[in-house]
Image (cartoon, rainbow, N blue to C red; front, top):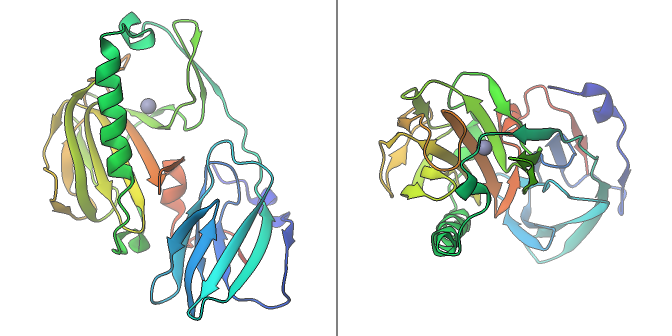
Length: 276
Ligand SMILES: [Zn+2]
């Protein structure tokens, strides 16, 4: 899944002729990148202000439909700013044609809308967490082994109807397969029987980075629990909007959904890094 060639062609417009920072990862729609800017306090990207750790680490993410050149501003301890612009590469999204989805989950009844609104609010609130923990620095593992049955970002067609793009990665696995925490973190949401997500868990990895686990058959953690990478948080199931048992694995940075696959490339191993 690595496209090395494209890493080599990047168009970075330097606004100053000095290297305040370096940044690693795939500079493309739906990806997350890790940066290092010692001496800086925060980074402003897409109108969101992200913390920079005491040792100079930060993360930014590109949404699925991120387009054009994006300014990235570093702010130092005295409030002095440096702004760079860089081009975000386009990602090719697939089309996911799903048949046999429960009709009610494709065209909800007016009575279902209250449940849908409640679900959106619960998840939005969990994804708004922005703790000062650095759990993401140690890297991530895949929560479940198995075939990827749905890529992040795919244009979904359910029972012939065009739906929103897929907000995570689906991993097919038998019902009851244990699900591991992808990294250390704190459980910020456990919710039963949501309309779309079914039984769902959200783990906060600090600095606004969360991972989401949906459609579980059972949940084995509770809100506030601290988990270590590899701890079992629940079991694969088929709750919510599904056509078969699988784990929907999602990732979000300050509410920007991105491809959880890109977490597996963090930190720098095998990634392309360049100077700002
Ligand atoms: Zn999914």
